[in-house]
Length: 167
Image (cartoon, rainbow, N blue to C red; front, side, top):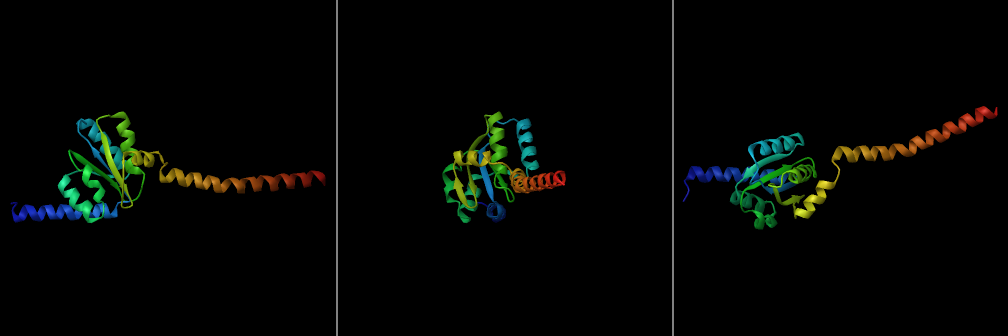
């Protein structure tokens, strides 16, 4: 039986994990076994740059936190070494960074993920990874909105020049 001090420490960790999972728009769970220190450092830097929180987690504590926020579907994959990458701002960032890194480093195995409180499998994580990031989507949308206006301006300009030439 763990001491009261250890038990209290674990309860605090579960509370922090619960809050993190509750606030996350998306997350990915991966097995990091086999990564070298240099590879892990590179991965952490890429995740930090993308605004993704990445930590190594204890499966039992993660299981308690996941069950508390309604992510019971994670239970079967919480075995072996587990890393958790979450983002409170961007749905695609954790998946995009981890999937791209896993392509170059076969040791990193993506187990599953979750989006808006729903557990997703590896294939769905890869689908999310293929979605352009938020900034790219905004730029495409603005470009789409500007195109008709630009065409209208060019058409009106052509009409004005034609009228000037006719006078």
